[in-house]
Image 1 (tube, rainbow, N blue to C red):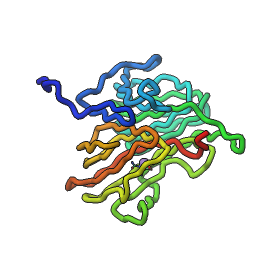
Image 2 (image 1 turned 45 degrees about the vertical axis):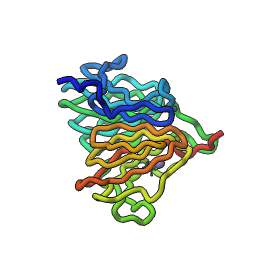
Image 3 (image 1 turned 90 degrees about the vertical axis):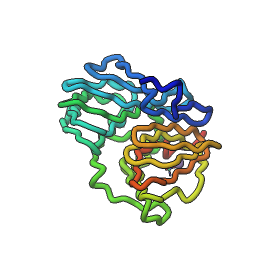
Amino acid sequence: MHNLGHTRSTNQRDHLLHTPDTFVRAPLPGMQNANAIIHISPAAGAAFTQYTAELAPGGSLSPASTQRFIYLLEGAADLTTETLTKTLTPATYAYIPTGTNHTIKAQQATRIAVIEKTYDPLSSTTPPEVFIGDETTITPNPLNGDADLQVRPLLPDNPAFDFAVNTMAYNPGAALSMVEVHIMEHGLLMLEGGGIYRLGDHWYPVTAGDFIWMAPFCPQWFGAIGKQPAKYLIYKDWNRHPL
Ligand code: UGY
Ligand code: MN
């Protein structure tokens, strides 16, 4: 059934909403039995790339030319480096620094959120090492003391990292306490529930499966207006001077 030309997806100068009805799948060079849905890249104005990789059983990701962050959405995949093998399952994730020989191979049908960004070195630190985590073991912090809005930082608090990835979980009715305007850009994947996202001067209904890009200084606000909790995975550039 066609959709008569309607979609919630939109591509604006300072934000992009990418909804599943508009996803286009294609393999990236080196992927085996897998496709990528590119949500955002420098072609649209971002300083990073984010895609969802969909792997058939036995499928694998391409090598990375930059640092890479992966978060398992569904299925199971083996991450192998020269020193470790780890099976990643939903809500587990890995940070893989630039130049790390590795493979990511699906044991079954698997979906992975992938973020890639050229590393911005800092003279006072050495680059981070491989890091593997499990979101369910992270103690959440209430945002601005709001117990209905819990933030889980997925990467260590270490200035060597030039980006952060967090999950934010909203109880029904919870909302950001302010419209944020900040230099960091965001890549956001709605994991559960939904609500209304203000981006610039637009208000969008959003739901699980949607992706949002927010450019630096894009005014942003979210309210989880549904009856279900809402949760998203959110990337931001971090720990670096703007110049
Ligand atoms: O970390 C953040 O900037 C976050 N509070 N932004 C957002 O949820 N849009
Ligand atoms: Mn923000």
